[in-house]
Image (tube, rainbow, N blue to C red; front, side, top):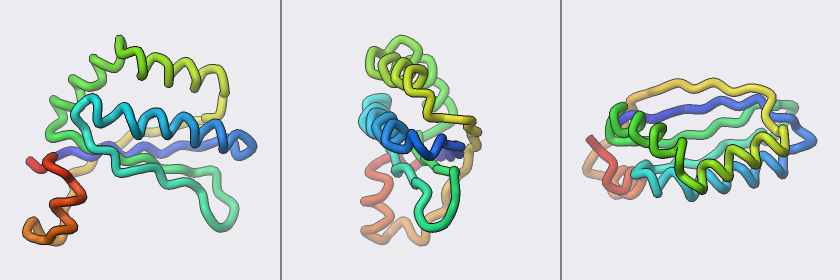
Length: 117
């Protein structure tokens, strides 16, 4: 399993637009065979950093998703919305392999919903 961790620098006054864009991708990633673990938005204190995490069974499956997304109507619509609203100042992408407490616990199996390697 590979987890993509996205770190965003958001334009705070456009937080509502950022959240709307996030909701688009929360629905899209499962269509491509991934599991979206959610977005983590700035909470207490002053911060313009938000995180997004989603997983695929392998880096190859992630790369296949990236190719499919280039022609997928929903992904193209999300990209268009991003360009129109200008709510992202910058972003960075990193890949991690998750380590869970135990593969035998219900929380683990519910969390990954069949995406384990």
